Image (cartoon, rainbow, N blue to C red):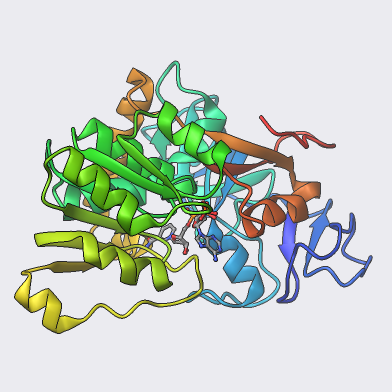
Length: 353
Ligand SMILES: NC(=O)c1ccc[n+]([C@@H]2O[C@H](COP(=O)([O-])OP(=O)(O)OC[C@H]3O[C@@H](n4cnc5c(N)ncnc54)[C@H](OP(=O)(O)O)[C@@H]3O)[C@@H](O)[C@H]2O)c1
């Protein structure tokens, strides 16, 4: 089968992906066309023919060697994915060959086949686009656990989403709207602003030509709102520091990530005076510590996807052999929503959908 191997750490955007492991053009990633198909090692294992795997910022950080989880080399990167059941172990009871599924893998999904235990798989409901379902677990899962499970966002609360046109950001604004919140989004550029407005966001700040704080303050004043109740922050750095000027008494801060590369300082003295709650949220660790929370969350998200309450915006889709371009789209901040890598078939799927 075709599999994308990370054979050394480095920037995957600098060179094209070599089409054999013998070919070394300096790229840390390589397409292995003869990788063995993984075996069903337990009776409850399921072999999935991967349709699409999503590319998360963490995948890029992992190949750079800058992510908290550092697998031994070589490894096949892993992320959330979708596909069709190709074979099942002797004691699999919930799935049959041909079922459409999605899941998340720490490693191994950038390949044409992957094996998962049946307990890790979710059935994709009829009517849901299979590529879209592959983008759901991490980005939407993170935002859903953060906003619904942790912050318990309620109708009428003010939600401020930073990095709002990115993977977790577009999920957060949509989940915010489903919860009935007043959603304010921060993103850069007219195209992203236009897209966020199309999602029904109440106020969008274009950080490339507007000052975030005065723009949000003006909106809050016009709507007679006191401040932001929930800050969803996948960006960090200066933007987090500034956004704290907008927070209400009793606000909640959801620390999601540091796309800016800068870890912000949240002053404990102000948190005390203003009764703020700071939630650190690492979605992946719920798989170990609270699996039922993730299970309920993903089931709810799949039902929302089937009902059309949320949509997955796929801004770019690439073949495994073009994975360098997929990573470049993330690096260059060109993505609106998600980047997907299509694992089935061969050849170029290079596209901006
Ligand atoms: N805690 C968790 O469990 C969890 C789960 C998933 C992701 N994350 C983290 O959340 C962050 C965002 O992930 P994602 O998948 O949504 O990434 P993404 O699609 O690349 O979105 C990141 C957004 O951040 C904004 N940004 C601001 N400053 C940036 C900078 N200096 N470099 C790059 N982007 C910048 C960009 O928007 P503009 O260009 O419009 O400013 C971009 O749209 C990452 O740090 C990721 O590791 C955490």
